[in-house]
Image 1 (tube, rainbow, N blue to C red):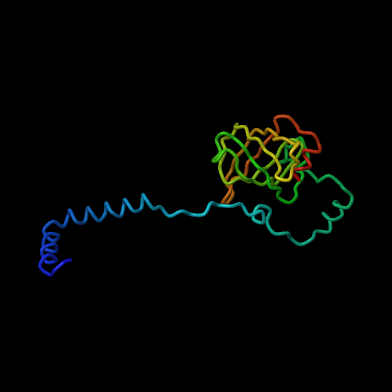
Image 2: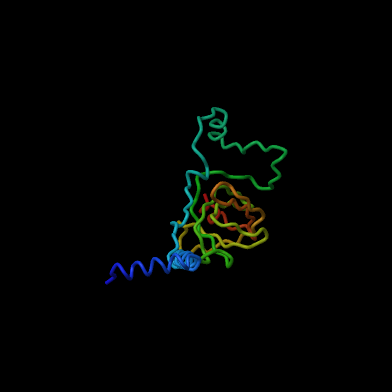
Length: 176
């Protein structure tokens, strides 16, 4: 194959043409990086991170839960509809601007006026989304919502969405 004389000749040529050798090595590394990129696994939403751990029981809130009293509203809470918190509910969110057309997300807050959705991708304020609970029967279609706010929260985005038209009560219950 290679004898010592041809190896010495190649070494002498490389030393004489060092910029060409370095440029060729850099080009080779660039081609390898472009052709074989490192692929990270797709990010996933963890429902535990969305609502946080359960804190110690509060006797005041337990009494209200047992009496079904509506929550006290502060002056800063300007919602027309009562907010209902609960465990995250898995949903499918569809829109033309989303990757793959439909993404998995979680409803982390809901009311008769709209939903707060945790999604891995930001959505433009004013955009329209179609939302459907994963556990919904096939007879229940998507619900149209308008994005009113979008803010980053750690590794996901929280979308404040308003229903275009309030869905029936049985459909609202599918969101938690």
